[in-house]
Length: 326
Ligand code: NAP
Image (cartoon, rainbow, N blue to C red):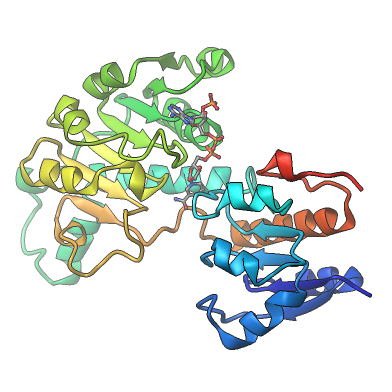
């Protein structure tokens, strides 16, 4: 009997057909909650799950005793119970690499938009309030030639740094768990302690994963260390930053502006002051959200799941300890 896959992510017809060659596929294209009755009813016979943004809880795993692999259509897996999955021998696969450049584009979009006040000034035009020449009260800050500090210097951090160094002549500082001599050589990047980076950077961009160590890595103390002219950008995960401290730093003018793709609670509550602040550019977690990249991510997840369920070893395994070759 063919193994059964529940597909709740956005897969195109070719990708569904590819899965269908070897497996029974049940698609839930509009699934919004793991409590959906049809999805719950299908779980006991599921060998594989593929999708994104569904809360996978140990309780859900109890309802899926045959589950062998989950292919998340995302890079971040901080919302998965990795230990519980590993204990049960369930493989978890993610989609690194294919979204690096697009997410770095989003980082640079936020750097540019916050520095040049693009959203605020575009709104002014939209409202019909462009009555005279723009004066110093609407001037922005230069990006080229400034110092860009990356907190986290992995794939995405390095891709943001390349844009800054090679495209905008920026000096690159980074704080990262390990040194990156090859990037030091390529980009003239300089590794610094976090505090030193915060004090010296004109732009501070967060690209570390959310882990127990990085939760609230940036808070009141860290914002106080930044220059009053600093522009803060977060394209990693909202919980890496203490959002209340960020709001206070912006309100008190301790930093100049922020560009944010991610938030402590998503979707962002309409009650949050952040999207109402003129010096904040807030995006709805669109780091990798282009047609090309989302298609590539879904394809990577499909390939991972096929390999995992065939017992051949997926390309991108998060929990190596769960891997048991056939
Ligand atoms: P990556 O290649 O694994 O890079 C992460 C970097 O962070 C690594 O260089 C790592 O150091 C460093 N690091 C980890 N923990 C650290 C700590 N406690 N202190 C200092 N440095 C630490 O990952 P990536 O592909 O660049 O992605 C980074 C994150 O971006 C993802 O985890 C995800 O949460 C987020 N993301 C967001 C979006 C979005 O839509 N906004 C899209 C994609 C990804 P080592 O090199 O020494 O291991």
